[in-house]
Length: 370
Image (cartoon, rainbow, N blue to C red; front, side, top):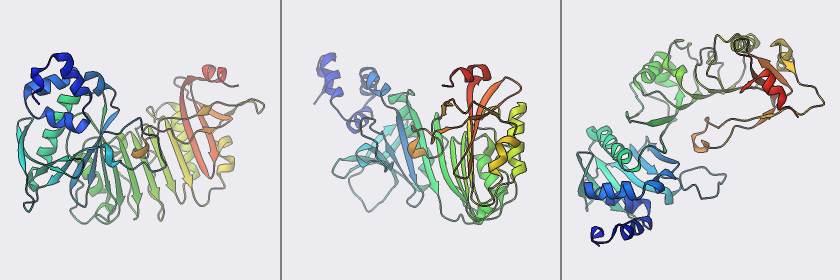
């Protein structure tokens, strides 16, 4: 089919009825075809919420998905094969059927694979990052930047000496990383070196499986927007104290009462945690002090006969549920920041301390109390 021989209205109708894979393949054909797709499918692309790169460390490959927002949400948030539009893999010379395409000025080998004829882009070992960058630049050119671009990597194996997680430097991308602090990264200098050389992360999940020293207070790690840290075996350093992002959750064996009081005191003073929206600290053992902590942080209390507002923010600890909210919590207790009179709800649930910052002054906050 020669699409350009049809009137523009018919061209648009043809493209409107193509799936994302066919649109992507057509966009590689020529500059004129790419231009036609960009102009005729602009509204369609604006309806795309996200393009997700899922990197598999074991195979060294990245799969690209466009999640279908019309699909009902399930308890299993894993990527769906029907959303897969492209796979980026290391070249296997035993395979046949390669063809070459010019992608953002770089010649890349492709194949079509499987029942759905998913395009597969291939790289030689030394070209992995440049191939991914070229493909991503093509996405930005064709799909635009109205949607979120997310890079998702999990590195849960014990890191060996010299191990460096693969995070390509891509424009307009949010990075979601899961890692384990053990082995090579038990030395926080090695971990901090990796963080320093990486793009600023959107979310990081840390499983701390070894005793570690405190990190440098100026580390870029503390600029991560959302951090979740689980320390099931050891009492880690106070990761909360120097946090400069928006959301932080700690799941730990023990936590010093003095550190928790200091956290709230520093927030109330307005000297720290200016970007903070939500935090929780779940304490497994020695958590009896939580029963009195609200009084010790100088909390104010809403009249017990009234119902306080429910606090909830966008979930950022689990990237597979990026559009869900945190577990909402409701508390009669709140504290006020001295510098601008903003309010934060503070509460205790299931051996955890919850802290949620409202974008309201105390006067505005009390108006929404039922």
